[in-house]
Amino acid sequence: MARSVDDIKKEMTDAFMADPVIREKYQLKEGDTFRSAFSLVSLENILFFIVAAAHHVVERLFEGFRSDVEKSLERAIVATVPWYYHKALEYQHGDKLVLDEATMQYRYPKVDESRRVVKYAAVRDRGGSIQILVSGEKDGRPEPLSKEVLKAFEAYVRQIKPAGVVVGVRTAPSDHVLIAATINIDPMILSPEGVNYRDGRRPVEEAINAYLSGITFGGTFNKTKLVDAIQAVEGVKDITLGVCQARAHSGSFKPVEGNNYTAFSGSIVADELTSSLRYVV
Image (tube, rainbow, N blue to C red; front, side, top):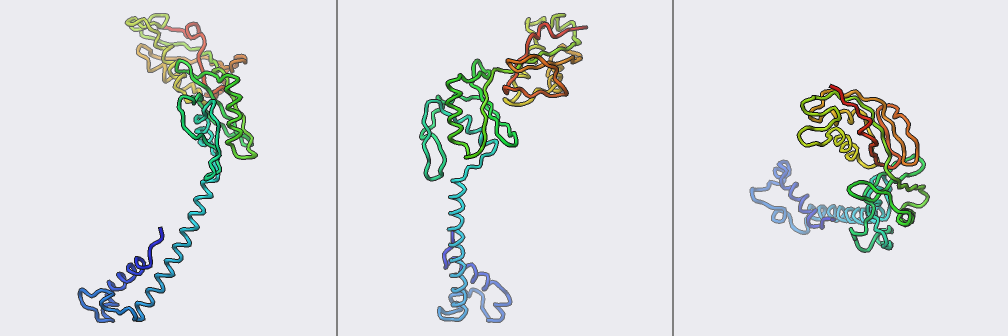
């Protein structure tokens, strides 16, 4: 907010009166103020008023300029990857968007969490286009959107995105991985089938499933982190990871080259762990 002429003038005169050289030249006494030492018609007072008034005008001009810039920024859509991500999660199925004339952006007139059917989202910048992966949720896991919901969501994206930007939307069942591994175990804790003697559970399989569930939607399966998750299980002494294979829901299994695999759908589940894991003493 622009300062008043009086505020600007006071700031200058306070500094003027505090200057030891000025005090000596004008023979000012202790306790003198600018008003007591200089009359309203003095040259010094007139000069300070002129400078303060000029400063006030400049500050008002900059204040107006800043206001115009802020309004322009509010109207501009900064379509970054995080922006697309948050907009995907804000989708309200069955609700109509309205144009906010203050910002010239589309929004919902009322936030309704019960209509937000997109529970998982990931955005990938393809260079010349944007890819959005989305899923609903069932039993705590990603669930593909129905054809009806997907069609409505695509219309939503077309309406909110900046003009001219190519955006693709995908929803698909989870990718599948086959994990082959030889696990050296403590025979006093785990059975040859990987069952914990105390509670009858299969902790290695649970650790693998927990690791896969914990991967951020749209994230990457990492072999090193998988091994770390298995080695953290009580009763596991060592692990030799074999060939890991992966496929999209409708594809065929292929070996995972390198250390990482990025899911087509955004999420991953493990297949046939009971038969693909081998336990040795």
